[in-house]
Image 1 (cartoon, rainbow, N blue to C red):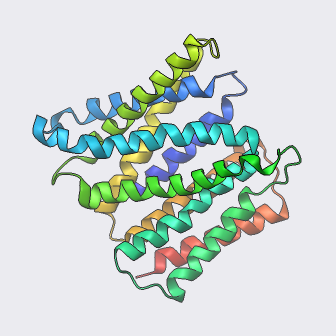
Image 2 (tube, rainbow, N blue to C red):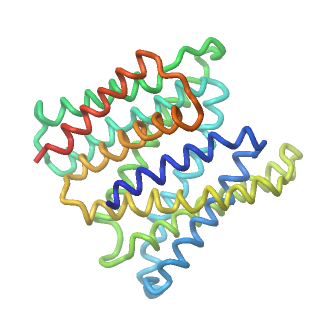
Length: 287
């Protein structure tokens, strides 16, 4: 159930982001506020799990890495969406699943055969078909480096979250406190970035956007916390959890986009969804 609720929380984030343009919400300010709200969620819910100062300090370097990845990937994602197009940016992030899954398998010395490659390939093709849209407004290839950074960075975040739970954190360190700590780091860095841009006159404070961050922060906390927790609670291999999480979000988000935002489903997208469902079935049946 942890993984299921993580997927649902991630899909809820998709709905909230999709609603931002309608309400003229500044995404950057909402995301910065969301990090502090997510931090508050973790501290409020698991205040009795906060470890002693020495153990807490041991987790700060790992949380700092997560925080850097959270905020930097978001900023690059926003820039890439403007320069390379939303579709290309989305595909780069979602395709990173392949790299993270393969790396986890290699780190765990898992056997790589047809039974593991087939569902991964089905998932990749399905995700590509669901995400790809022709975009005639894309600029020249001078900004393609952003797609490479997003591909590697998103896979890196998956790897960090996995190893944080399995090896790097002190024994018994609660997942909720770790997730809260990572969000705090991201929030502090995001706030510094906002203040610099504000002093330069590049951005103006928008109260509604900060309020919107409250709505965004709650599902964001649970999407990360429950994903990290699922590595300990589910009787599945790490690569299966990663695949299920990524494909599940793509599938759920596409269905929500159809039902809530009346998005059009082309034949290409329908085939992609079918392949995603088939990949989920193979992943679940794997030993």
